[in-house]
Length: 293
Image (cartoon, rainbow, N blue to C red; front, side, top):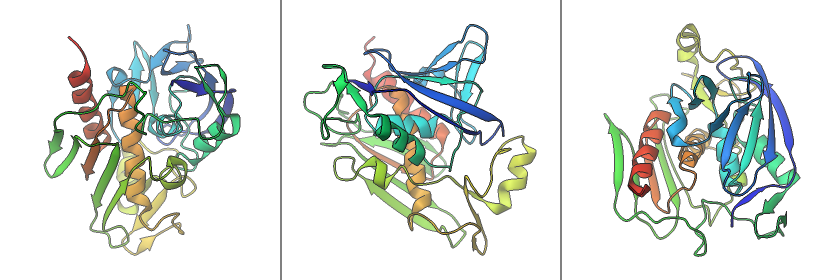
């Protein structure tokens, strides 16, 4: 049953790459509208669908575009909406980048929980336990099931989708820095809530790469308040929320990127050392597979 938020909510913050303040107002939307951004700061208030066809670039975040309008770093907010079961939402924003907040999806998820969810069956607030997520298998929902494996690969990094009886995500990372090292995490939405297991995981970076990335014109808004930073000797801003917080955050990004399908097919998604680019490329393959000519 498609759903939207019960009331609008608004959050402001700094964009990771632009360093500029933006205000996001998430509003209810009617069945069939889907999730989409509206650049209210631009003439004509152009709309940008949160769909894989809108992806413009994937350098250290996912950026969407429609005509001349763009919106960057959409993955955390979209993951929060999808993980909370919000199918339809109008997302008004007065700048070109979604605020990073604390580097996770936690504040977005909490805001959604505060305003509540409306089911389009009767447009009344859903009773507790009645809400669902596209990440959860529901026999009565129109979620397609993957019938054969597909994958994308770049050197030793890959993202794959494998047929499975219910949706599951497994992610692996491998860093030479001892504080991160090799991490794997597997998450099944029907067994663990997105709000508790995934949403609090923050973005992370390596201290040795910060200056190089900034010289490229990126992470102008990054700080120890909105990202975990790791050096050769350990984390600069502990404590971590999970012992394996980095790999959980990568899984969060994967959910946000796959949400650009509108509906995530039932499958086991397996990723290793992947990136927004590979996430989106897999989403494009899935879109082609489930699009009727």
